Image 1 (cartoon, each protein chain N blue to C red):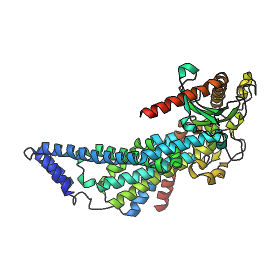
Image 2: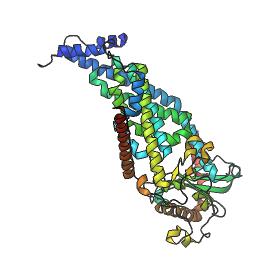
Image 3: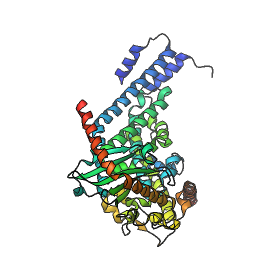
Image 4: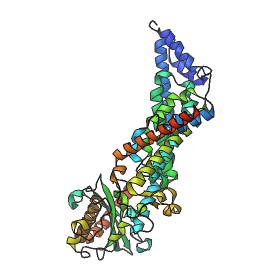
Length: 240
Length: 241
């Protein structure tokens, strides 16, 4: 491209050809860096909204697997509070999505993280019914367990003729099974481990149990907190 | 040879800038490029490039296929752009330039896939950043795309990617069969609900063979694949003599 050379030539003096060559090289690298960044920036600009939308849709889809869409009538994604880890005993700040119908609490969905898996953190969605503290559903949303062994807790990795392992949790509560039976079978409890992996199911059973324990104590508080929070958010929006 | 003067360096560099001089006189035929990429000079089995992602993700066929597709796309695009710009790039800055191009392509592919096909991105997403660590891409940029015309560079990129993908799939298949006794598990995350029944269980009540799934198993199976290729090559040579 002649014009690029012409531009580059106009920047440098012709006296010292070695430094001319170096300057040309540096300038052309800067030029190509500028072009690359330009394209990356444009792509980012064009895709940012769509990506945010997709992520919201995916989260909503995951939440709707735990609570049926007709069992609530509020805007689930915006009715979210974050439990600070200092107040809860969970290892991370835990987001909770609160579903209500005609302003009556129906379900709280906890996004719980546990560090007791085989490798790295496991993030779960645990839905707890607000009236009787039974589990409406458990889904694993993020993990780094061994492919082919620990990842059997994913519904997508379950063979079509078998019931996904996480369905075992449906309708369970702290009295069904009894608190001391909230263990995998290997440890004398009621929950299956899967072939070749005990640590992963153990971590998940434990995380679900502590969620239930927390929910039983704090369920009423959560929904009153939510109202408080909602007013704070609307106040912020007014300010903006 | 005595010390090169700055004048000479400058004129050498100007030679590279000349469009006529940068294309080698003898060009490889398309058939040779294809057979080199798929067998003779296969990226995974012969050049042993990109071993890190190759060994890390091939626990099953679907993961292998995912990384394979992502590599084919990136390698084809990077070869295209580098062949297209080859006459404007001075040789002193070519390596940072390749890194710039590859990192930009990977970022653009990552963002676009996230926006256009979020389902596929949720599966392939973890593999795309891995591609930046794949020295196969920069290797082809330096060894081929910077010295050849656009059609040849694109074909080389695609075929090298395909050769790499085939090794990934073979490795994934062997490790999945040995490790968990299944084939194509998790196909539905990539192909949607039609693939729900694609998973094949080869043995009833298979207990699993953990070694095959863990990284050491990847090295062992890779070694066996390379040995297999060498045996085939020897047979072919013996026949042709």
